[in-house]
Image (cartoon, rainbow, N blue to C red; front, top):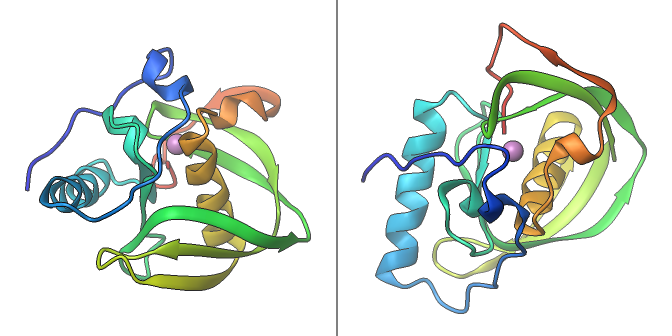
Amino acid sequence: MALRTIRMLGDPVLNKACREVKEVTPKISTLISDMLETMYDANGVGLAAPQVGILKRVVTIDIGDGPLVMINPRILASDGTQTAGEGCLSLPGKAGQVTRPNHVVARAYNEQMQEFEIDATELLARAICHEIDHLEGHMYTEFVEGEIYEVEDESEEE
Ligand code: NI
């Protein structure tokens, strides 16, 4: 495993749509391990492959319940809304208010390329939406309500 460099807002790789993963090759396995290590090293709750410069549909998330790997994730259903401060490892030390669904049902593949479904609320629902946006080339800064502000606690960056 190795730490990868996190790309910062303004890097064009963050504005590109990612390609689907067809199979978990050794290269993809290494990418996943490296993404987890990089996310934990940065104290983040989520990381998407384009944030380490790879345009593949892979995300890692850990909101404190253990690692969640989602390959080719998609949202099947969502309802409700939540508005809260949201941050991103590609814009460290900053946050902004973003409205997201409060509940999502998502489907993805795990590291063994087995399909699974996840029912998520609150922070996990927010993290899944945030990471899927990255796979489409979008940053939360596009959806911020009001100003982007400085934060001292960087523990909820994605
Ligand atoms: Ni992010």
